Image (cartoon, rainbow, N blue to C red; front, side, top):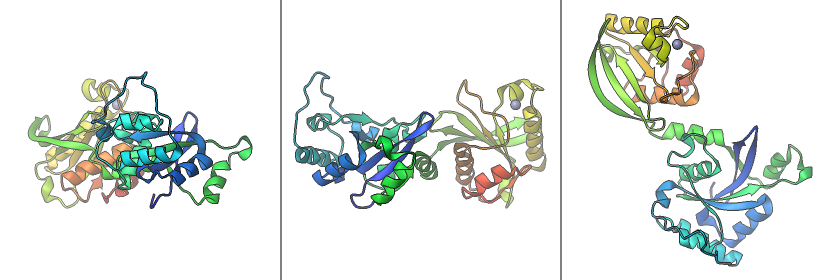
Length: 314
Ligand SMILES: [Zn+2]
């Protein structure tokens, strides 16, 4: 999104995906507004970051919008983007709907196009306000219609998935809590809590007391399983695996158990595979605890690739 070029944003929409032209609202000159209207063809709205919207004054719903020319509208949109905060009164004069993005952006639950657009302009350092126009393709354009449009207009394309990956790479995911010495059946371990900034879950990193002296400690990633971990259910091997890992780190004095927890009432799925968020979270916590190299306990190939791709060689 250099200069005033809009970007094609593709986001999941039901079973398929929807496409939008997104540009920083500060580039909203009349020529760009005309261009986006012609190329995209659908309705526009302003997507605002929650931080910028905090200062918003909201007009009563029955307040009539003020009609204006496209040049006036462009001037209003640009002025909104170029000053701190966000003034809903002024936005209303431009006659353009405003959507405030959710506080957790694309890392929140079920992000929509406003969240993707705001995270996109923020990720490229272009402020808090995105001008979003839905791309409506001709009926005859077919499934390749978007490819054709992007090629013909030399437009850069970004997917929602790419934006989430960038957010996971660059945003703090959790806050470290206090470290406590935890006596267990197997011996003493050091326990550090991490509060997940997005799900609110409290994850735990358990370390043998001498782990710092190991250049490549063994790491066991365990996902919370209430029935197995708490009640020793025999339906799965979770409790046995957790016990073995704890016995290992307490016995040898070295090694790490990363205990990932789900949201209350939403247990995590079984199996060794880490999804994108979990892999980032594990990498984030290990890096935060200055653990640069690890050996993965039982070396699941998917876990190894996921962590290695996030700066944790294993
Ligand atoms: Zn289980």
